[in-house]
Amino acid sequence: MTIKNEVWGSRIGLILAMAGNSVGLGNFLRFPVQAVQNGGGTFIIPYLVCFVLMGVPLLWIEWSMGRFGGKRGHHSTPFILNSMSKGSLWKYIGVFGIFTNIAVAAYYCYIESWTLSYAFHSIKGTFAGLSQTEVAQYFSSYINMSTSFLGIPNEAILFFVICILINTYILSKGLAGIEKVAKIMMPLLILFGIFLAVRGLTLGTSMASDQFPLANAWDGLNYLWTPEYDSLLKPGVWLAAAGQIFFTLSVGMGTIHCYAAYLDSRDDIALNAATAGFTNEFVEVVLGSLIVIPIAAGYFGLDWVKENISFGVAFQSMPFLFGQWGDVMAALAGVFWFGLLFFAGITSSLAMGTPWMGFMRDEFGWGKIKGAVSFGTLTLLLGLPCVLFYQYGFFDQYDYWAGTVSLVIFALAETILFAWIFGMKKGWKEINDGADLVIPGFFKWVIKFVTPLLLISVFLGALFTPEANNWIAAFAQFSAGEGWPLDNNSLILQLSNSGLKESLALATDATERA
Ligand code: PHE
Ligand code: NA
Image (cartoon, rainbow, N blue to C red):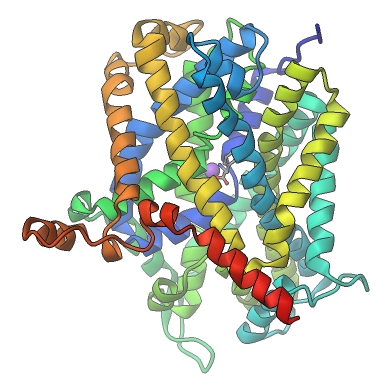
C-alpha cells in the first residue's frame, strides 16, 4: 500500500500546530487550580524544575522518535516504537498512544463544548444581570441537561455533538486543515489572552460593598509568584507539578510523535520543539495565571480563591465577574474568554484524533474521511457516559486513568526505550540531526539518567501516595514500624478498588431508580 505522505506546509505552520497541540484547556483551567491548591508560590519551583528536567527532554525524545518513525512510513506510536527496537513488546506499549487519546478526547471534547456554548450565551446576553448564585446555578442546570439553546432541549448534548462534528470536519481535511486552523486560532487566542490578562493586571483594589469584600487582584499574583523553597521537600507538590507538566505539554500521549512523523527527514527538531514548548509555557505561566486568579481575587478576595478554586470557576464565576464591567464589556470579555478556551481546546482535541487516523491509514489504507468519522464516532460513544453521568464522577475517572496515570507509564516506557534500548548515542544523534540550535551536552546526561529517575519517582510516588499526601507523617509512622498509611487516592488502592467501578455502580443505581 503506498499512500503519498503528507508533510507540514511551512515551518511556522508546524510550530503553531505543535503549540496548538500543547496549549489547551490545561493551561487555563488546570494550571491555576493546581497552582493554588498546591500552595501558590510553593508550586512554582517544582513546576519549573519538572519543565526543564522532564518536560523539555520528553519533547525532544518524542519529536525525534516521531521523525524517525515517519521516515520509515509510520505515523502512530505502535509502529514508531517498534521501529526503534527489535522484539514486538514495544508495539503493544505503543497502542497506549492511540487509545489514551481517544479516552482523553472523550471528556476533553465535552468541556470544549461547554466553552462553545458559553461563548454563544455571552453574545446572547444570557448572563447579563444574573447574580453569582444564579450564574453558578445556570452551570448546574447546564450539566444536568436542563438548559436549552434556541429552543433545542438538552443543550449539553447538543453542543457536545456539534463540537465533535467540527472536530471531525477539520480532521477530514487532513494535516492541511489542522495547520490552517492553528494559524488562525493560535494568534487570536494569544490576543484574547493578552486582553484579559491586561484586565486582570489593572483591576486593582475593589472597595468593600454589600456584594464584595475589600479585595485586591494583586493578592492573587503575589500568592502565586512568591516562591517558597520548603516545597522542594514535599513529594505531593512534586507529583502535582509533574502531572501538570505532562498534561500541559501533551507528552506521554502519542500526539507529538504523530505530528513529528510528518516532518521532513532533515527538518530541525531541537529548536522547533523548544519553541513550541516555550510557547506553551508562556501561555500557561503568563496568560494562564493572569486571568482567573487575579480577576477572582480582585472581587472575592484571595481567601475565596483558595477555598473555591476548581476548573468550574471558569464557568460558574467568570461570567458573573465580567458582568461587573457593564453589558457590552461583559459580552466582549465573555466571547474573548470562552473563545480563547475553545480555540485552546480544539487545537488540542484535533491532535488527539491524529494518532488513530495515522494508524488506520498506515495499516489499513483508510482515507481521511473514514479516519475522521470513525474517530468522531468513537469519541462520541466514549464521551456519552461522561456527559450523561457527569455528576457520578465519570469525568474524574477518565481524567485520572487516561489523562494522568497512562501518561506517566507511557513516558517512562518511551524514555527507557529511547535512552537505553535505542541508546543515547543514536538518540542524541537523532535529536541533533538537522538542528538549528546547539543543545547543551548536559541534556544528554539528563535524558539518560535524570529524566527516567524522575519518572520512576513520580510513578512510585503516585503508587504509594500516603494518607492526606503527608509524606513526613508517613515516613515517621513507617520507621516506627507501624506500616505505610496509604491514601485512598494512591494508585495502588485505585488499581485494586477502581473508582470506575464505584462510579458505574452509582450511575446504574440512579438509572434504575429513574
Ligand atoms: N496539552 C493539552 C492541554 O494543556 C492537553 C493535551 C494532552 C492535548 C494530550 C493533546 C494531547 O490542555
Ligand atoms: Na498545555
